[in-house]
Length: 162
Image (cartoon, rainbow, N blue to C red; front, side, top):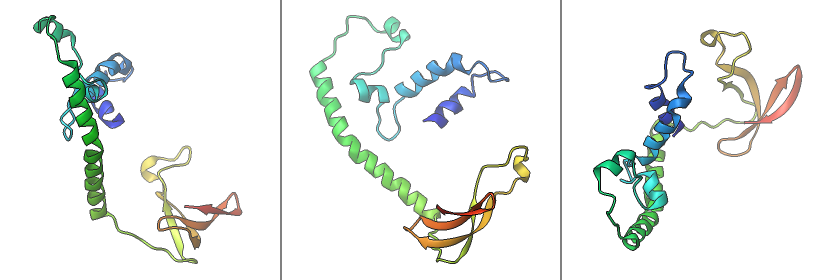
């Protein structure tokens, strides 16, 4: 969600990016009222059971329109019952896509490893900064993705779990 909102804000902010707060509410409203591609309904609808009324809607549509609230509530209940299935299906699809490009790596105790880090020291140029720290010695395998290792900080060896 944050990425989508930030991408939308880039279309409105000025060059020095100081006026983003002026457009934030407008972008969030647009995000909350836009129908989700997989579900077919907006987040606003899923929360309140009705579509959000925009100022232009008050001009175009007559104000005396009535809606059947009981029918709307029943439809909202059906959608909310269906949502967990849709979310689970989407999670399975994302896992499948992740597993296509992910390779499981196993390390054994005593093996030396490098650790990828995005952080850089103060004053370093990002393009020239080292992307890996180490080598570090694996002590023990805790789970499929976590290992206990010997980490040296300020000249003192400590044990860290990665």
